[in-house]
Image: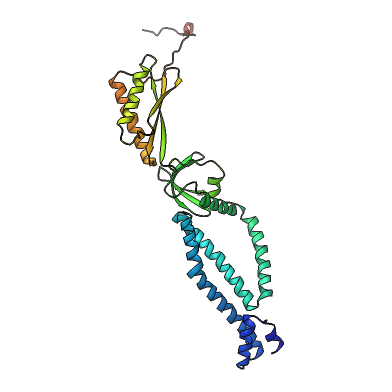
Length: 303
């Protein structure tokens, strides 16, 4: 065997090269062909093993951990890319392309460093997207509020999330904006408490107003009996006494929240009107003297 054939090594590529040389191929061609065949063989085998065995196993692991379907899809893609890169690396090693692989690794490291500096915001959002998938502060279909914005989550990717506002506007939000600050998810739990203030006049019966507020909460089918509705006097204002009602609804959504609250406020207002309980509005009394200047400069009009 010549020096060219010996450079292919004693591994898979070397064995293939020696076999081809024994068949009568020139040593130089046998060496190159052995490396190419070794690379393709190892890569194809690893590719099919990855698709048939590893990815299904990883999919079952994600399901067992309770990951949402929208989270499994990008994680599956990322896993496929990582496994593909590993397959290429192993195939390079089996083919005896050690020097080439080392050169590619050096170039890739330098390119990664340069790209990292150029795409800091993109990488920041990518990492934030991973935190969203792992921490799961919200999922698709949830109603969330952040930095004065609110809406329904329609899509979550590794870089951005898309939120549909209640005015039917689509917001494309960088994931870092949703992980750096406080996010309110009113529908994350099964129950949601609503606080509804009612103002009554100082001359009105507080106990009777409280009874009406409780009765109307009990009469509404969407308001839960357990936890029971409660009413507390919370403020003595300039023109009214504020009674704050605390009620609970089950399996909340934005639509349920708005509808239930509106119906509840309306029925309480109608009962207040029927029983003569006033819902006052602010009054302001202005005092002082009115002075008119410049009358001596005004002359009567000619008849």
